[in-house]
Every structure is written in C-alpha cells, then in structure tokens.
Image 1 (cartoon, rainbow, N blue to C red):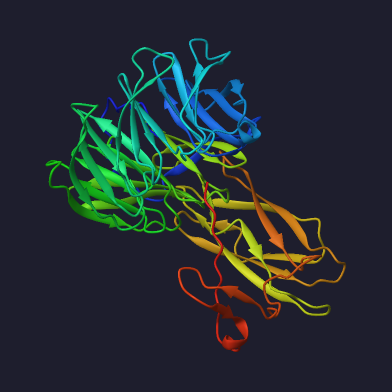
Image 2: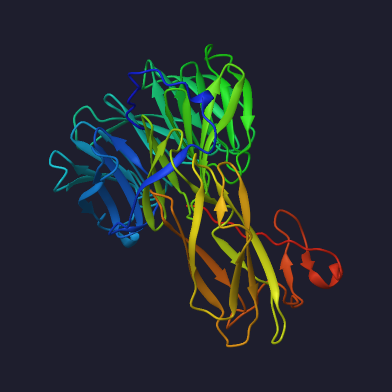
Amino acid sequence: MRFIKYFLTTLIVFTSLSGKNLKQVQNIGLGNIELLDIYIHENLAFVPGGLGGLNILDISDPTDVQVISEYSAYGCDYGRLYAWTVSGNYAYGTGRECGVKIIDISDPNSPQGAGDYGSQAYRYEHPSSSGNLLFLSRHQHGVEIVDISNGVPPTSLSEIETNNAWATLSENQLLYVADGSGGLRILDISSPSNPTLLSVLPTSGSARDLDKVGNYIVVAVGAAGVDLINISDPENPIFIDNYNTTGFASRVSTSGDLVAVSDWDDVEILQVSNNGLSRVGIKNNGERVMAVAMVENHIFSAEWLRFSVYEFGQVSGPDLDMESHRIEFTRTFQNQSRTESISLKNSGSEILEIVDIQSNNQDFTYTINNSSISPENSTSLTVSYSPNSGGWSETVQILSNEVSLPSQHLEILGNFPYGPMPGDPAPLFELPIVNGSGNFSLIEWVESPVLIAFFATW
C-alpha cells in the first residue's frame, strides 16, 4: 500500500502544538462496507470493502468526500479484494487466493474489468507499483516483480524469497519489504529480473507495512507499534527507535516528517526526528481503524463500517475525547447493581460543555462529575447497571458543544440474553496444544487465572 505524496509548501512547526491535535471533519458510510484499506492516487481514494467490493472516492475536497463509482470483483467472495495500487490507466487489486484483478480506470466514474493475473496457489497481500513495475507481496511465497509496461497482460520478471511478505515500497532502484517475522528486507532492483538482497534487519514485532521519511523507513510492527530505521546505507540499516502505540499498528502513511498510524482502536500521529519517534496526535474514535492514508495535514481513515477524514493541527474550540466508546458489564443478577466509569477529556482550546446524555433504557443510569470541562482537563462519566426490566444493551448519545462532532456514541452491554459472558464460570474443556503434544485441560488449572486469546486479522 503506497500513497502519492503531497508535501507542505509552508513550514509548520508541529512540535509547538499541545493537545491531541486531531479533529474529525467528515464521517460517511459507503455502499461497500467492512472497509479494509486505502490507496490514494492523485485526487482519488481506492477503498476496498469486505462486503461488496471497491469504493472509488473523489477526495479533492477532504471536507466533502464524494463516492464516484464502485467495482465488484467477479469470481471473488463477496466481490472482495483486499488492497489496490495504481499505475497509469490501470488499477491492480489483490485478493489473496483470488489473485490479482486489473481494472481500467481511464474513466474512474465507470471502472471496467481488464484482466486477471496470478494463481490461486498464492496469498496476494498488499501490492505496490513504481513506473512500469508491479510488486506483489505473497506472504511465504515471496515477492513477485511484474512488468506492466505493456498493460494487460503483465509479465513476470522475478521472485524474491521472503519469510512472510506483507507489503513493499520501491524507490530509487531499491525495494523495501515488510517481511512479517523476518523484519525489514532491502533489495537492489536495478535489474528487476535479477534482484539482489542487500540487507535484512529484525524489527520489534511483525513487519506489516512501511513508508519512507527522508533517510528513514517507518515500519508498522503490529502489537509492538512502529519502528524507525535509518537506511542512509541500504547495506547497513540501523534501528533508531520504537514507539509502542496503544493498540495494533497495521498501516503507516507519511507526510513531511509526520506518520499517520492505523492502530485498531484509534488514529495516532507520530513525528520523526533524529532522536526518534514521538506522538503528536491521537484520536480515539470508537471504531475499528483498518488503514489510514495521510495527504498534507488530512488523514483518511478506513474504519470497517465508516470512512472518516481527520485534520491534523491544534484544535480550535472544544474537543471531546472519550477514553472508550464501549462499556461491558460482567454478569449482574436481579436486585444487584454494578458501576463502571470512563474518562471524558477536553483536548481542545475552549471549555467543553456536555449538553445532554440521551438514554432510553431504564436499566442504565448515568452520572457525570462535571459537565463543564476546561481545556486539557478530564471528568468521569459513571454508568450504573441494574437489570430489572430485562433491557441488556443500549447505544447512548453524548451531546456536547464540540463543533466538528457534537454527538458521540457510547455502547453499553449488560446481561447477554444468550450464551456465556464475562463473569460466568467456565465449563470444563480440553483443547489440543498447538506446536506441542497432548491436551490443555482446564481442570488442571482450577483457581488459577487462564487467558484464552482468539485473534483474527484481515
């Protein structure tokens, strides 16, 4: 996943800014949902959805993004492709086992299928392109370099051995590979038919995505955050710093010396300096942030069910940041009551007024310590749950005097009407031990804490 870069024409000193420095300027729903990624080409954003296929957006006005067309990949489950890149009049979409789909975007208002490439034997991840070359990341099957100079069909030139290739970036006859547990690979591709490995550098976590800032590569390394690597000498890259973000860093996109990070439960902005990485912006939006693309001071964000645009810079006026957009109670019996609290912070420059909390479920009651919050201060919102009428869930609207987002939601979950929930006793069970022998038996761990983690990623 790579983005066309637009650089600032005026010098803005971001280090002097205080607060969280991100405000939402647009939030829209798209026809194809379960948004997975973003690729920016000139004034167009290519946003694939897990259900329905590709959305093509006009982003020439970041505050008024418009959907101009859609494309559903024939033969792929739900019309789904996971990521895109563009070269000339063609866009190339990868669909893991579905291969590579090529569409003609000479008229982006009416994209047309132009051909297929690849094999179902491979799992194609994030493609990138540079000039007449297409780079296809295929996890354990390496990176394939493809000649697209003659349009359709492309011609395979070479394959690069990798551990688990997720993404690539090409610049100045060098290819940088985010190689999962294999870290960062750097290759000389001056002869695309015969690429030469220059160096391999381990990363702090699994390398999932990467972008470039001057002589530095920034690498999204999942649960370990973001790595900063000096690549002034490609044969001897030097690890400089790691910034451990609050969630799971899956994508990075740069503008000037800033790095936008999709971090699952928030969008974070890091700044690159010779001393390393520092966080200069964050927005916890309560959505599932899958990917971001940064153009100048605007950040485009694919958030599973919604598409958002944020503006980076000191926030004028009040700005509400919620510690969480979800509260989940443990099992609570009749005539019992439980309470949970979250923090509401004003990250703006003027007093924030909580105007109203709109609730329609009598099983939940709400108390706020202070409805007027000064800049850079916080207050607590306490939720009490008493399961008397049987209502178990609610989406509360918190209304404030914030200009850009005057209504924010808080999802509350009480006693589930079916199945187990937090606080219930676990039934006895056995599971086979992965990468080992025998079974894990819960009865052997009675009265000991046991954590079973399930994780899936697009």
